[in-house]
Amino acid sequence: MASTNGPGALQDSALKEEIQSFFDSAPPLRNKNGRATSIVCVTSGGTTVPLEQRCVRYIDNFSSGHRGAASTEYFIKAGYAVIFLYRRGTCQPYCGSLPDDPFLECFEFTDDAHIRAREPHSEAVKRAIGDHRVAVEKGLLLKLPFTTIFEYLQMLQMIATSVGSLGPRVMFYLAAAVSDFYVPWKSMAEHKIQSGSGPLDMRLAQVPKMLAALRKEWAPSAFCISFKLETDTEILLEKADMALKMYGMHAVVANELLTRKEEVVVVTSDEKVRVNRDKADPSNDVEDPLVKLLVDKHRAHIADSS
Ligand code: PAZ
Image 1 (cartoon, protein in one colour):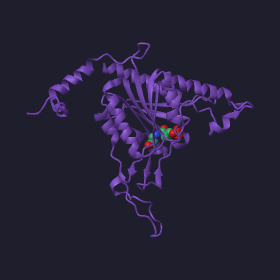
Image 2 (cartoon, protein in one colour; image 1 turned 120 degrees about the horizontal axis):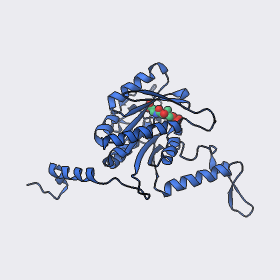
Image 3 (tube, helix red, strand yellow; image 1 turned 135 degrees about the horizontal axis):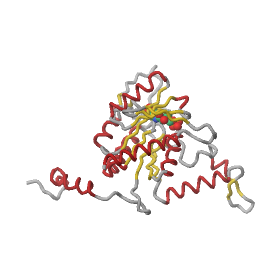
Image 4 (cartoon, protein in one colour; image 1 turned 135 degrees about the vertical axis):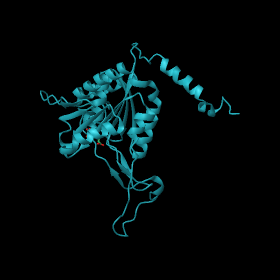
């Protein structure tokens, strides 16, 4: 007879139902101010596809990480706790107004061997350090780095299956540029591929469509937003529509490479909303109105689900 105490016990469907009903009826997690916490997993930056196990060469997907980093700041401002799953070396939240190499450009030694922020950067440095510290200390920002497609998808699955049980309060905002093709680990050369034997013939396998698994299996009650990047505007909205239907996303944000910082289109099953950067001030970005719109849609999703 199967034991009800061992790991096999979860096969027991009565226990599974009991556990599910416990979580369904539990009051939502609340933060220190007594407000129910909404969580968003923001993915950011491009994944790499290694060509060798001891990787010397890899294929990369374009993304500076600006969209993910800026959106993270707006989600935190809107009261969300953010899991920021980002490509190592790409843009970071609260660093948008700092120069490329802040450590070398923003600081100097004083005569008495202390370090201080240099003008004209001191105000920006103070704001960045302060805002970042507050977000981390309040438990509103958790940063997790990835490089390869393998790391990215394994971490996304871990996050989704961990927070998925929190239900509709969870949002996935998938701005990372994820490889469509890869070299399976088992068929990958271990050592650096040698160039002596002429042109390289390589067959890439298609990365399985994980968005469907995220939506249906890993976090079925979560609110899921994916992004669609194209360079040909003629096909952009059609491709976004296809992704919406194929993976059951709640919205797909369509953007074109050259205009992605000025305009995006939020595609849902009943409308296409154009979101533009407010040009009144050069420091305004398109992520501000985009996140506001998606936060409203997420609230409606939470209300519908309850
Ligand atoms: O990171 P970034 O700000 O330079 O660009 C953002 C983006 C274009 C990578 C993002 O908006 C996006 O469309 N991500 C999904 C890309 C894709 O279709 O795989």
